[in-house]
Amino acid sequence: MAKSPIGDGVQDSQLNQLHDLIKQVTITSAPNRWRWYLQDMDEFSVKGLRSHIDCLFLSSHYLATSWNKIMPRKVNIHAWRVVKDRIPTRFNLWFRGVHHNSLICPTCGNGIETIFHVFSECYMAKRVWYSIRKWLSLDIPLHYDPVNLLSYVENMDKAKAIKEFVIIIIFNVWWELWKFRNDIVFNPSKKRDVILVDAIINSSFFWFRNRSIKTSIGWDEWIKNPLLAF
Image 1: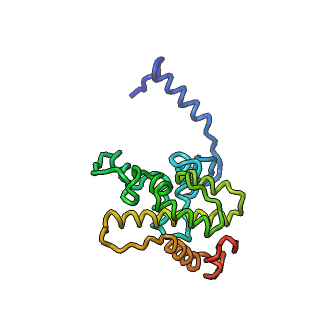
Image 2: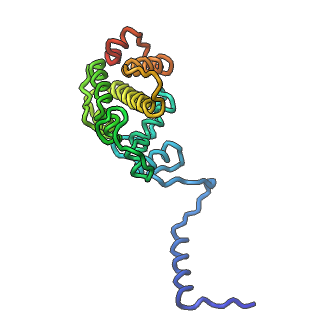
Image 3: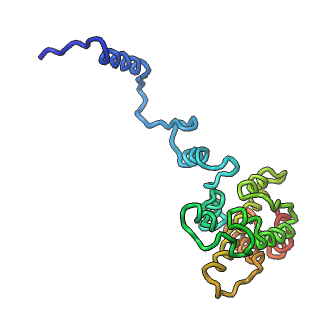
């Protein structure tokens, strides 16, 4: 059967486009392989893909998927949710259509329960931050939201190890504050220890002693000021 010649119109245009594409192909004797073009990467890597996703969807101030091996996984995940404002505060639940009798903070009863209120503005949060500042002899700002707080720490004129340590303490503060808040809401009969700073200091020390290979700080040094060990 004779083949019909390609005439003018759409088919001719498509043939010309095909010729242009073929001209761009260079055939070599090298073995075949897949290439990865994101972020000028020649080959695929999980780290490169994660970095690309972070740049697209996360705040430029802090890459929240940068897990810290010293902290438990649940604390890492919780910190990621805080930075992304995915904590189920009463305001966030109301905003998503989950209605509650009140939007007021259950911890202090003074102010709408938002991410900023729970971790910065609530009287319990302020008490904890004041104690942490005194413990570390570090001027941690009290009026920053979580993202700007991390950005502040990253831009401090301190050694990298010190900044990484302070971020770990911040994550732990967020974790303990939210646990305390949940006890108030879901376990009203539970006897609560309001000295949250002790829990933060103790658990942080346990993590470092068991997970960190860079420091062998003792308890006495830890209680006085762990930053002096870096």
